[in-house]
Image (cartoon, one colour):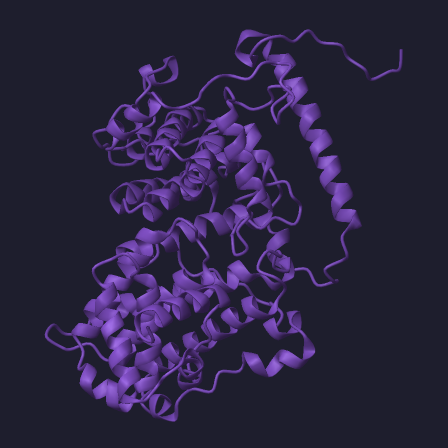
Length: 516
């Protein structure tokens, strides 16, 4: 018999057998998976010699390092709502205070109704599907496997989870809480025909909360990579689903976890976890219109974006602003708004020029880090501008700050379930415009106001604010004899270019409501 072979007895679900057997099978399955991924990567053409230091800043699956001390999370205690399905793991809560702080879910009635329709039939050991060897840390059903497969195959081009090593996915099968939160997000993206999307997503969210409670109670897992990633994802899901109050609770716990870990630089997953945490922070700040909890992280030595595009497209990255607008930039704050517009234009142009919409972005372009930087700058400037004296009307710089933030969530962060945050940002843009003297700006800066109104139009679909932005677009078009979408693009040529998907949506809305 060849050396290295081990025979094990395995039948039924993992919970009914020897845990060491499940661990052995899981390790072999993941080893085979990683070997396949390495083989695929070897067959791909090289991306170039340049390597961003960001990807060298962490070690994948780094062990917990809490700077030589064992500390417990201490956060304000809140009244928690029990999860839908009480199990031995949730019957008694661990002693850590952060559990209550993370476990505030106020919509159990939706998940309760979903349980009746959920196909939770466990797969047998001999099932030939994805979980043929029961290596997942939770009981698998056909619906769960479908959600996992769809989420893995339908990747998001601008996602912060871009992973050149292809190891990030292994966290899904190593940790129950992380897997449940991934299922929650996937259930929102891929709703079935029964209309159970919201309740299904909530069900998995609450299961993730129950599972993360166990991890927080364990000193070895309390601030591990998987636990931090799970809490950050919880905050994002609550924000994207329109529940900022719950998100704030998760973000407070997340900040404390990162501090206990030793700071952002001590996070693992080869820098991916830092990106996940920072986006959760920005997503929460954008949703609640507050300053980000983490200070700006700078990413030096990034190559210019035109180097990732065809050589004859370099000029497309240059944005020549309207001289009337540029002449009004008398302060560092207003000059910063113009700088942000230039960065937005570069990022959108990059998306339009680099490959097909289904192609992955070049890892070395550090696209998520660039979007993070400009979004953090916009949020900080918005927070500072809020300190203006009461009674002072909004100016063009306030309008452009709000429009720039909405531009990020309609053009640069292609979040398929981010409707609630886009609606919130659109509403703030409308309130800001209503507080300004639009008659003056439509005369002096018509191209800027048409661009802003088009961004608002895309962000307010299926809301009561939609017709207000539609009226703004229509009035400017009539006054300046704009009769086609090509003329719109030419008229707004001094403003950031729209990403092609957003441009198609805007053109469709335009043709349907203006030219019909």
